[in-house]
Length: 84
Image (tube, rainbow, N blue to C red; front, side, top):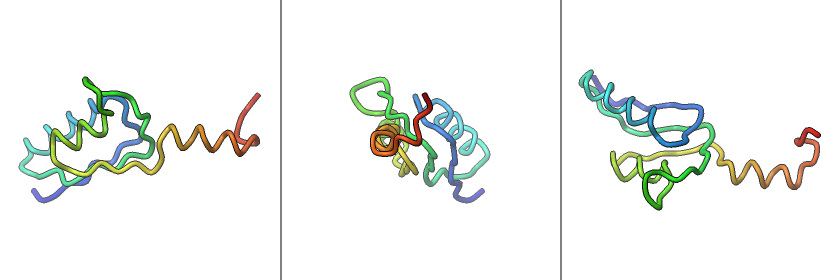
């Protein structure tokens, strides 16, 4: 029972988030948001990203600590982060 924050390491298609929402609701609780370590910025089934689709489908916030776009931009200014 209560409100549950879903925490995941990465979002690609949003499948694990959708499965988590189903399990949380089946247990009588309410998903209140999703915290993702890395958003891979993959497209969902349509033109939107998987994170945007999850936001729209469930009406809950999806927040990423970082996106793949930000991570790649960082490697352009920090050569020490790139292995050769």
